[in-house]
Image (cartoon, rainbow, N blue to C red; front, side, top):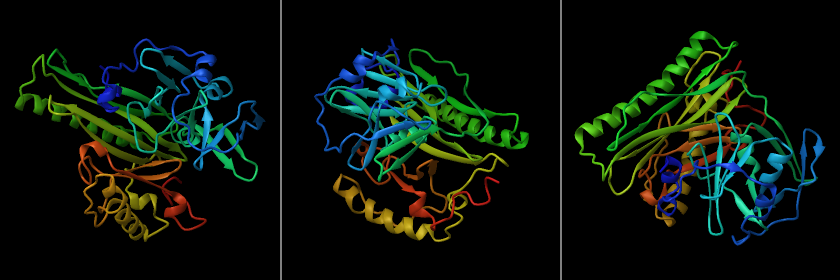
Length: 369
């Protein structure tokens, strides 16, 4: 069983997400199950790719612009494959791959096994759609919505000139214990060597901590063939533009208890000097950002989240909160169980830069120069 399956919950435990992947035919994407309930939607919207109008239309659902997966493959050249055994689409290539598990009764989305609350997909009228926010944040596509013209304009993002590779830490696995610990490493001719070393050191150290914690739990526990232990992690690149790199690292451990445990951590760097940025560095243009966040998080965590089974009790954001950056804005991350039960998942709250910064100002003031 692979880790993507574990993170999608008990209903999906029988699935092996990456086994037997095959190229998906257009007919399957367009004729895929239409039994899912359809949300109220507006008429189709035009899609422009590099200034050229596509024959395929997007749609607007509850204020979100959705792009058909078939168009991503046929017009944008984004690789799309399909595993019929698990009803799972794989979209994209390289260091970020989008996995969409879709059937007549559910749709689950993740990037490299990491599934956040902002990740959605929909089966509508027999076609699979994903929001343009996922294109912007994880698939290297800039997307702009023009409400007046009912048009979404797509183009390739201008990414930082760096190479990102996945490295694995050596660890012996057997029938009782499984270790799959990886971490990103960056390189590039235009990078400051000291900055490159500083960033890579932080990322490798994080992975080493995962492995060390796993080995400690094995030494203190009693894994068996019938009740094996599993320790793994993965990463997704959330932002890779304008001299800034933001990475989501997620660790998973299962010590044969009632359920596994997941921890998510954001790392945001300035490529110019290798500095690990704090939220105050990202939002330097707004010295009062904490006041806004404290007020809004208090309303959400102590209000609607409680109605969904949360514990409440939020008072103030930490001095250096856990966060990551996407092209869409900033996401604040809390720990599993911190403000809600296990079933709630990892609490995350996303804010656009327009919400957090004064009009006309930009994030990362002075960091990406």
